[in-house]
Image (cartoon, rainbow, N blue to C red; front, side, top):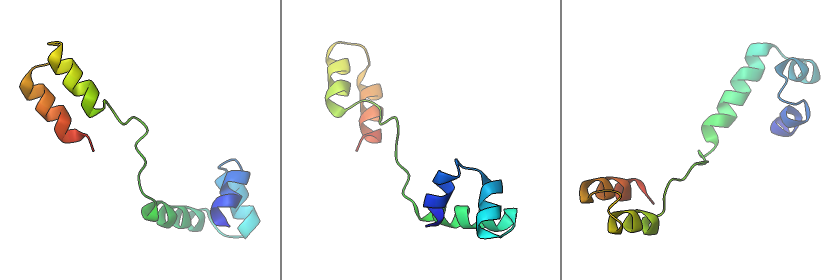
Length: 74
């Protein structure tokens, strides 16, 4: 319910204060607690393994760079 209200208030902490009748620090604390429980979602996943191998094959990166990049992929 708290997150839905936050989204509907267009991320306005001032509106959240009024809606829940709590102080700014209380809203921030609640948001921080919720954020701690959320898994981080990567928005820029980087190159795929196939793309890295293709770059290596084409000579656009050396073996060490490819290994480093492959170590970062899932």
